[in-house]
Image 1 (cartoon, helix red, strand yellow):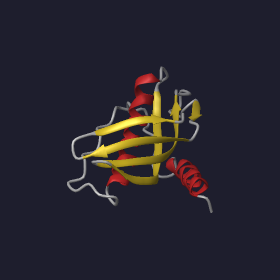
Image 2 (cartoon, rainbow, N blue to C red):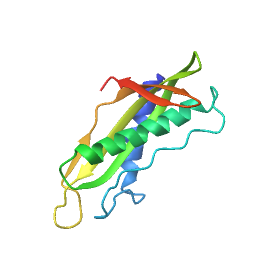
Image 3 (cartoon, rainbow, N blue to C red):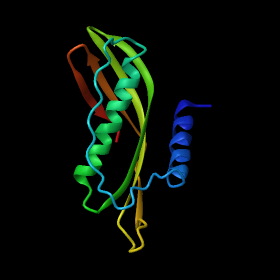
Length: 137
């Protein structure tokens, strides 16, 4: 199976089970998240998961900042597509899927869901910098 299909399937499955596993915030405010700390050792094994975690926080915080409706839940999943050594660091491409729920119908349930279009984001990471180079969104 193609990695992008598997990633999309994983995001869809997590979306289905999020409500069953207590994913809804029940009226609590959805807040910005803190970015992950850079791994103590950067190498081809650690830089990919770090960049994926960084992109999950980036997308989460962008939704919090941009959305005008009352947010109920944000689910973002990112998976590593490639890691290549570049000069003094690594170029990492991650695939991202996301959705969020918003509003309140009066009974504590959200009034809507927004499914984000899957995209890829590219990062350059070295010992001193984490630079988001862009995305295909």
